[in-house]
Length: 60
Image 1 (spheres, helix red, strand yellow):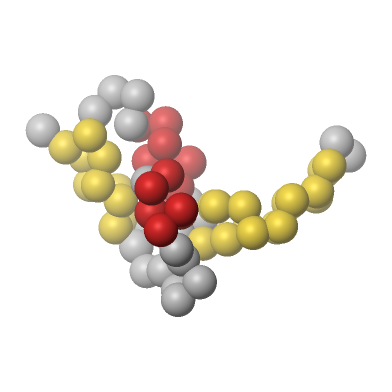
Image 2 (image 1 turned 60 degrees about the vertical axis):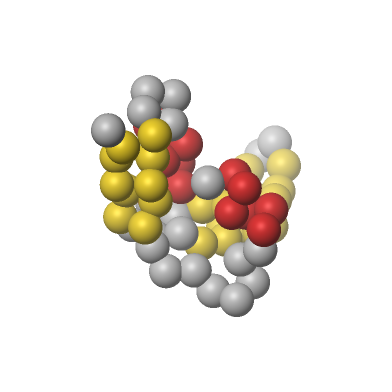
């Protein structure tokens, strides 16, 4: 059985005292999907823009 995850899928910019990163894969559905993938098959559902490419799809 697989798990459907519905939520936002986006690019985030993050700045911390330890570094900065632009266009990091983020949104609510992404970290949840990655964590859940350790336990079952995950099927993320969410809108993405034209800038979402094959490399990002491969992560999910």
